[in-house]
Length: 387
Ligand SMILES: *Cc1c(COP(=O)(O)O)cnc(C)c1O
Image 1 (cartoon, protein in one colour):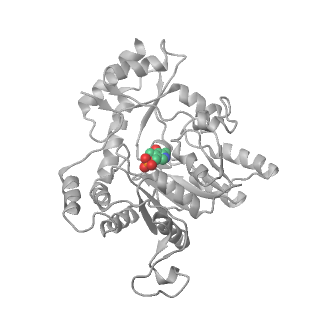
Image 2: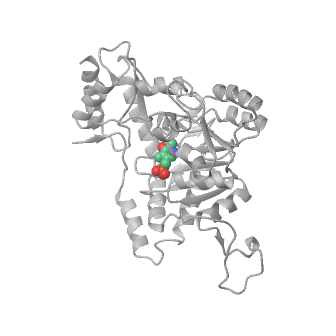
Image 3: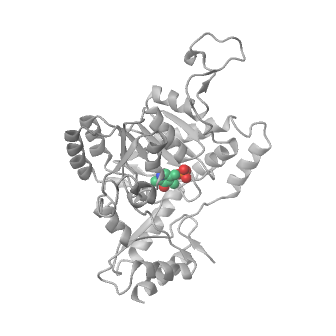
C-alpha cells in the first residue's frame, strides 16, 4: 500500500453534494459559488471572497487588481511553489526574492527589512510582496505589514497551505495585515475542490476588480457600466479579464469539505504531536512552531542533521520511496529554476533557503493517515537514518 505525503479526504457527504449539483440546472455560474464564498468568509472573517479555478489564477488576478505591471517588482520567498513568483511574470513585472527565517522557513521579516533599505537607496522598491505561509504556519505578518506601511508596498498573502490556521489568535485569511489573501483547494491542500482557489479582501474596490477579472472583465451591474444599459440584455466589458471561474460542482465539494475544516486541522495537529514524540530522539530537526501561530499543518517537514547521520538526503528519500512512502520536497528554491536563472539568479543568492533545501523532506501528513501508517513511516525513517 502506498502512503502519500498528502491527499484528499472525501466522504459520502462530499460525494452527495457534488451529485446534487450534477442533477441541478447550474453546473457553473450558479448559486453554489456564493455559498462557498460565504462559507469561507464566515471561517476567515474576510469581507469579500472571490472563488476561482486555482490559487494560481487567484494570484494572477490579485496582482492585476493591485496594478502590478511592467517596470514593477514583486518580491516573494524562494522557498515556495513557483506560482507565488510566476504571477508577477504574467503581468510583465520583475521578480526578486527574500531569504527565509531559519526557524520557521518562512520569508524573514528581518531579511526583508534589510533588502528594502538597500532597494530604497537604489530606487527599486517592490510594489507587491507575497509572503507564503509555508506548511500552514503564518509568516510574521505584523512585521511585514509595518514594513509595507513604511516602504509603500502592497501585500498578497499566499495562504495556499494555511486555511484553518490562525495568527495571533485570528484566522488566516482575515486580511488584517494584507490587501489580498489567496487559498488553494488542490487535493493535497487542507480542503479541496479538485482544482480551485479563492482571493479574499476587505477592500470593496479590490473585490470589484477581482470579480471582473475572474470573468472576462464583463459586468451586468449598472453601477459599474460606463453608460445606461441598452436593455435588460445589457452587459459591458469594462476591463480585460479571463475565464478563471470555479464550477458549481467544485464549489459544492468546497462547501461540504469546509464543514470538516476544524476536524481536518485538529487531526493534522494530532499527527504532528505524535511525530514529535516518535521522532524526538533522531538526528533530525522537527518543525518549530511559533507561539503566535496555530499552523494548518499542510506539510510536516523534517530537516536531516546531515553532519550527525551517516547517510545523505537522497538515500533517505529513496529508501522511503522504495518502501512506497511517497515523501516529497517542498521546495526547490525558485530562484534556482532554469526559468529564473535567465534573470541572473544563481546558487548562493539565498543561502538559508538553499541550506533548507539540502536537508528537507516532507513526510506523510494528511487527515486520513492512520496510526498504523504513521508507525510505518516512523519505522522506515528510523531504518533509513541508521542505515
Ligand atoms: C499549491 C500552491 C499554489 C498553487 O495552487 P493551485 O491551486 O494548484 O494553483 C500556490 N502557492 C503555493 C504556496 C502552493 O502550495
